[in-house]
Length: 507
Image (cartoon, rainbow, N blue to C red; front, side):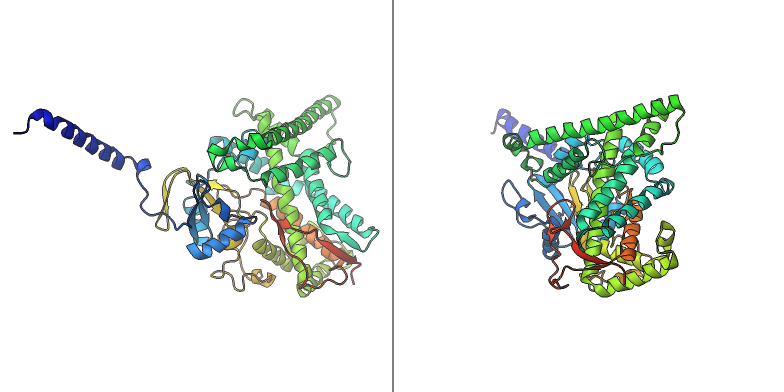
């Protein structure tokens, strides 16, 4: 006979095992996911980080051809869902947009933008909704964009005169486009220019923007492998980020204080001649919302930072790639010239009123954005709960990268996807405002770019004025086939080599 004392240990063990199984099955967060998306083999510690390369959008596109349009990678300890099809993008940015509307914390951005208090990187929630609402209503509405029309047209006229009076027939068009966008955004956001030494601190500001781009393009192991977070302190990376954050804060603090002082002066002197810029508008919103929902100073500075960071790069790179494609396709260039010059007619100028008549110009711009979206992987998203996409289980906290570049070149959607053919957009309602998921250069859904109207207004008018006033050609001895279209590495994809062109009066 077995004594009861000998049965106690196995009985207790069995009961504990049953309790463990019950809790495991009843807790969704601890269940093993049933079906994960296909995933390439990973290495210990670094996972699939080594497969990203200098141009992640291209590397991920190549991997998606092997593993499918939904692919799970492990970037160190960070699970990342790579999306490379319109259907999957629609599922994330429309059908399950709420679940995938969060942003992951990125160390450099979080430090520089006051703990991500801006629009682009703020965590999804009430704070983000309030800030975005203020920006959409007060800063980026159609009415507000139109109010800055005079600034756009003035700066573009200055650009044309600068090119016209160039001492050489060969110009660096990339530099000219960078200056144009910086000057427009500086005047719109801050009320004055911060280029060419026209304002105190202009050189410092330009250098800060360049350093930020360099830091964002620097790989920080701690962002993906927490146990290696110490490396940034040893290499000095952390110190550089903190120093840059202080410099940006000092600059924007000075701008905000300058606007406050000017407002006081205008109140005392009854001077209303100054046109309101974005800082003025945000300060006014701050005063109006003091009792209801206070807007902090850090929020104002973070939003202005967004306007610069998002606006400058996306606008000028779109123009740069569009002009590069036109130089490679002289027949397309000629067709665009004919349209623009016909609409201009005897007045010899193009204004924003004429843009709606320029259907081919709009098609050229759309085709350029299809092939060269400024942010090819858009901005990363993060899932806030477990979900299912196309039969695959996606865990809460998964980072999501949507490859807009790959989707825009999908042969299942686009005929001859790698060819520059603006005609494909002439007889279609397809647009870039987030309703057509096979074409999402500005993203879609709640976290889509709110500044599309402003960016396109600048791009289209600048392109029209350039095409109207000059004939462009490649430098002497260079053919279309020889023209280098290589990309420079970075979050925003620019040309590797500046766009140097030969100009002449229109024929």
